[in-house]
Image (tube, rainbow, N blue to C red; front, side, top):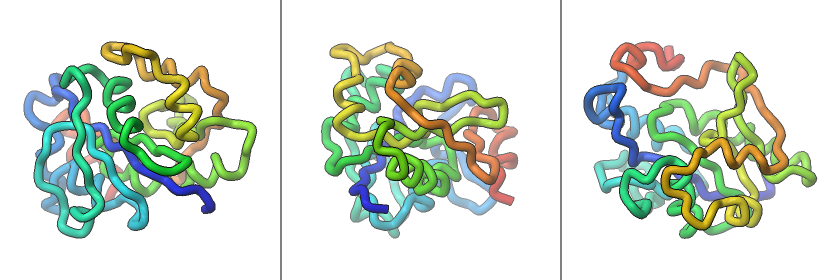
Length: 188
């Protein structure tokens, strides 16, 4: 991969459907949802975590930077805007902190973006063919231009107006929405 990449991990949600702090919930391997997500990120890429500061795995601690969206709790697009504001490089990957295997799919997305210079994004598509704009690789310049002046409360799907290619992962990429999801992450 020829692109320089920064990963923006969205970790500022309220987890209303989960009932408690789902990012701190433990997976079967004993790590929290967020710790597993961060530890699985490609090792050469800086990580910008959008949300309150919390413990991170020691193997990624030297490349994690925490930032907050304004206002806190402003939604995924506000989180993306806060993260991309401090991102370096020509590609920004966006990943939800509640998706333990997100880091495994990001190289596929960056590869798809690198392979097609006519698109501004490579977006993960689920088994039903639904694109996920918060699990994607974006050309930094295009992402910054596409963000609304006031991103608070705006829908992340607005980013799908960018020219993009949809990519399917060769393995399940589940997020954690309910406590039952802690054992159904596709991690075996």
